[in-house]
Amino acid sequence: MTKGSKPLWGTSKDAYFRRTLKTEAGLGAAASERLFRRLRAEIVQVRLRDAASEVVGPPLEAATEPHAIDATAASAFDPYSPNVVVVVRTVGRERALEALSRIDRVEHLRLLAREQQLSIEAGIDSPADIRAAIVSAAERRIANRRAAAS
Amino acid sequence: MSEFVAIANRKGGVGKSTVAVMLAHAAAAWGGKRVLVVDLDTQCNASLMLIGGGGWDKARRAGKTIADYFYDRFDKTAEDESEYVVNNVGDIAHPRTSKGKVSLLPGSLMLEDVQGELFLMVAKKDLDADAVGVQVRGRMKRMVKHFGMDFDLVILDCPPGLSFAALAALDLASRVVVPFRPDFVSQFALDRVALLIERVEDADQLADIPFAKRRYACLPNYVRGGGREQLLLDQIALDHPLLTARLPLLDSVARAFDWDETRKSMDQKYTDALPHLRTLYDEVLGPRPKLARAG
View 1: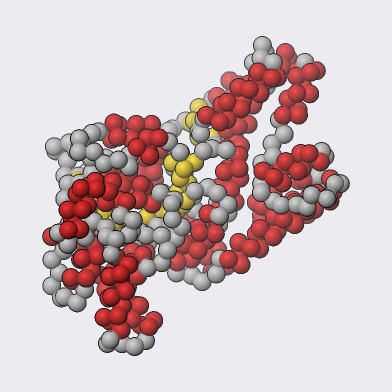
View 2: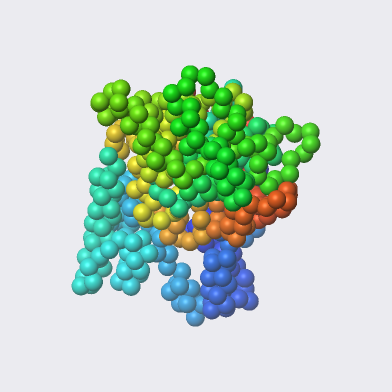
């Protein structure tokens, strides 16, 4: 491991790209999203100097014009967070439901379920029911794996 | 004192042979070690990577493969194993001053049949199937262990599934690298191979063994770097030690499969996979490896 730097993978790497792109004042939301998707697809790992996060800093004013906020908010949803299986395993069902309660939109909850490969019934349409179904699917996953490991 | 490192996973197609060969090249070129790769997989991919199709065909026609070794020497007391080994294999150029070289005990398509024959041979003396299995496995383990006298490092490229040879290798290895593809199905395979390596019966017993005391570590291979993969790695990390190294899905790794008579440097062979191999080598075989050695 290189001294004075840390590797970023997966969601950490993606979050870093988003954070960095947001600081570019002249970059519109659409271009930022295109760049983000390209970087995410093409780059497996970045190695971040310890001081780099300070250099990136908070987003600049120009990146927060109203239409940019809307576009970014819509596209910035991370379907991999929280990692429902990990949360259920480490702190239990209630805390997983609590973590999911921060996600209000049905389409986001469905996207999270799809990306985390937690199958929920198509007929469920209230956010509370979808959250409960997601957590139940995570519990099933954990139980299946445990039963198979013997 | 030789060290035995197994590359194993009960699931196929996870890159075991590629990892075995990459580590062998790295240990010889960077560590100056005399390395033997024992190809226990009937697919013989490690052999093809190290001596090419022609070299492997020559070895099997001459009766100098792992299957021949087990069959010829199984009930002999005096073991002269060196004639089964092909020396100075691979296509990496080594510095003249280095003693680091890679040798190979070639694989065989017949290994599974030979194991069946050996089982029947022992069964004539003992009718208890479990006891016969233990005997065959134990004898294979001792036969492979014999190679430790001539090499600094013996890398055991295990077959998928459970054969006597695979179990003997897992028994013998002081450390085990478990390559896996970061997909949903792989979790089950990791759980199962971990039980075998740590010689426990279920997930609870496995959980009682701290990561630092485990003989194995898991290596994510064919990594693309998407959020779904990271999600899965986070889940796997709850139950199994993960290496920091990750081998991305790179053309350079796929091309490294091609054996070439022209010897080249590690840079030339592994190109953009080299930094990943360096991390893997440091973690598994470097002076301060992250992967625990069996007591």
